Image 1 (cartoon, rainbow, N blue to C red):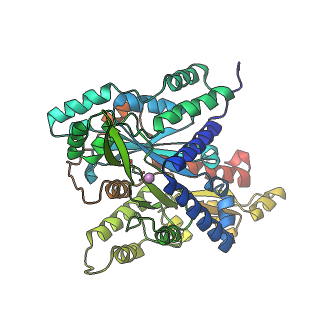
Image 2: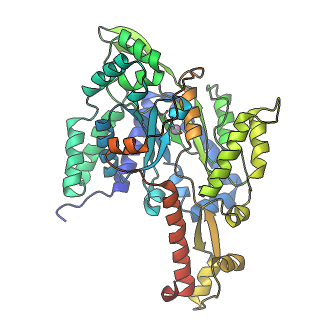
Length: 458
Ligand code: OOG
Ligand code: NI
C-alpha cells in the first residue's frame, strides 16, 4: 500500500463531530438538547447499573455520547449520486427505502449508515437523505422552473469532488486528505441564508409545498437537524418543556415499555430564520429544528407487522372516545409482549447471542455442552441481547416532517413508492435492513456454536 489510509470509521467520527460543532453554532437550541440528553443519560445510567452493564456487553455504551443522526433533502439525481460517493468515503451505505409521499411529503428517502458490527459500535452516524420528487408537482410550469433552478446549482466544492474521486482511485485517503475531505464536505451541509431565487419564485415554490421551497431555493442541502440518542425520552421531553423549548406535543413511535422497541422520537419546532433574496430583500424561512430519540430492539418482519398494525389502530382512535393519543397507544400496545423472553420466543425481535462468564469458564475447562442455543440459554452459558434498531420509521418521519412544515399543512399525493426510480437516480441499490439484522443474529449464533461445540461442529 503506497499510503497509510485513515480508517473509514475515523473519518466518519471526525465528520460527525465537525457537523455537530457547526450545527451547534448555527442552531444554539441544539446545544441545549445535547446538554439535556447528557444529563438524562448520566442519571439513567447511575440509577440503572444493570442497563449500563447490558449496554457495555452489547458494545453500545461507548458509542452513546457520540451517537447522532442528521437529515438532508437533495434536489437532483446527480446530487444524490455524488452524496452516495461522499458517504462511501465514511463507510456509510444506503439502507432502506422510505416513501414519504403517503404522508403528503413529495420526497423519497434512504438512510446512509455503517452496517457491520464493528463500524456500528465505533460510531453509528446516520444521515436520513431525501430526494425531492419533482414529478409530484402538479403545475408543470413550476416543475420545469424548479428543475431549471436545480440544474445550475453545485452543492459540492471542487475540493470535495476531487477527494471523493481520489478516494475511489486510491482506495482510501491519508490523514491530511481525510482532514481536508471533512472540511470540504462540511461546506455542503452548511446553512446559506442568501437564497438563489427571488422572493416571488420562493413564494410560488412555497405555495406548491414548503418543502419544495426549502430544497430548491438555497445553495445547498443544509443539515436540517442533528439528533442525539437519549436513554429516557419521556424525561428528555419533560426537560425540554421545563426549559421552555417548543417541543412537539406527541412522541412518535411506540409507547414507553419495559423493553424498548424500535425508535421513539420527539422534536422542537423548526425555527424561523432571516434569509435574503437577491437585491438584498429580506425574508424568512423555517426548516431547521432539533430532535431527540430513544432506540430499542430491532423487530423481525413478524414483530414489525404487529407494530405497524397496533400503531395504525392507535392512530385511527378505534373504540376509545375521549382517550388521549398516549392512552390509546398504551392500550393498543398491551398486545405487544414486553419481556426479552417473550420477544425472543415469539420471534418478534432480533437478538445477538454471546457467551456469559459461566459459558466462558465452561469452555476454558474443555467441556463441550450438548444441545443447542435454547439449552445453553436455559443453562446460563449464553445470553441473548436485543439488537438495537439502527434505522428509521416512515410514520414517525412523516410526523417529524409535518410538525416542521407548520403543522397544519396537509397535502395528499397518491401513494407511489418508486424504489427502482430512487435507486436508478442514486446509481446503487438500497440494502435491506431486515437482511442486515438477520445476518447479525446468524453471525452471533455461529460464533456461540463454534465456541461451545468446538470449531469443527459448528
Ligand atoms: C427528515 C425527517 C426524518 C427522522 O428522524 O425520522 C427523520 C427531514 O425532515 O428531512 O429525520
Ligand atoms: Ni430525524
